[in-house]
Image 1 (cartoon, each protein chain N blue to C red):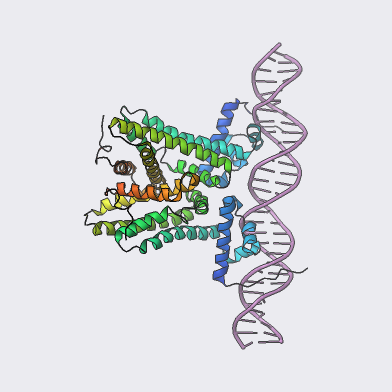
Image 2: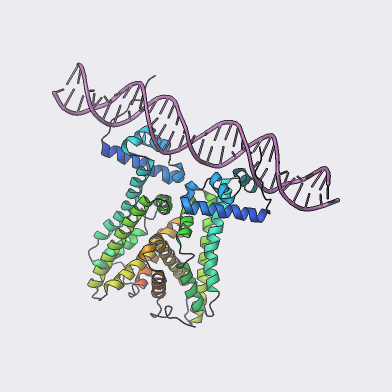
Length: 213
Length: 213
DNA sequence: ACGCTTATTATACGCTCGAATAATTCGCGC
DNA sequence: GCGCGAATTATTCGAGCGTATAATAAGCGT
């Protein structure tokens, strides 16, 4: 009647492990395969522990959703701030969104698994909304800085219209490029994204595309 | 010990009923709520009947997925062919894709519920791919006819790049516009779509937007 | 080095799922 | 109008789900 030996972990790392295991399960076999038992096994613990750190499975899924979305936005934002000019930052932001690890089958699996919960569960809807608005705001900021740098006057309303359009384009390319990953070479997608954004903002051809310092 | 009385339906209409009930269940409570029992109840039959018409629940879900996707494409194509000029057909196609019933919470629910299966189940992946390519081809045809009408020479490769970009834009607007339905007025989304496509194709402002006869 | 707190395991419970099977009713061909 | 095939119902089964609870081992403060 020997029990398993185990290690007592700190709350932070245990929660992180559990969320990571949740994401692994979802990525591998969909939300249907992300059962309490599977997740626990993947995390190297037993099922009961989950309810010691989360009030239920749903709350853990929500935490996992937050992590995925935050990760996507942060990757793109982190890429952007490396740029030295507003134009470069905008360019990097766009490219990052259609390049791994954002454009990645695993990321898509996770995103897709959660997106369907938005319609049914308002907690997920809130998380989505929060991240959508934050992404849109980041894009809007990059855009308006870019237009200032280009000495091109733009009403806030028009800037927002542009942001919505660019956001849609990037999302669409991301979605299709990842779903049909074998149809597009990696650079092909990024190139298409830049050309399309150029056109969308009515820039000169090459204004964004051209490599710059 | 009285059994329920029942009506013997033709195979075609029974299958259609079952698929419709499946979609109702998914739209209302997500894929998790689309259980054999719920679907059967909604269709006014008992659960066992499902396996008389489909080899299992999964196959019925696939049939339902096909129906949803075909419906979306057909709605847009049907709207397009009403147009008298290539420009009008392109315009109508785009507007139809960001207007109810394509842009609709129910449609999104259904789409989202299925999209996550693409990563896990290759049967769903095949259905997706089939519909994606058919949508892209329809768009490409509309585009090239439009450019011919406009007497604007375009290489097939560039036409395809445009098609991919427009497709992404339309998909993205559709997705965001439906997810954040309360953020956009109905005409706002369509207007933004036309303005963005205009820019994407490097047309004159108003070339697509302006109402025309 | 011991005892106390608690993180973790182990086990059980009630429920619902998809599927299989057997019983029954329908309605068409004759 | 009757019988026969097949569509439909009714019932059962085993598996797996999320959750609850009790037993236990870990490791820190002292």
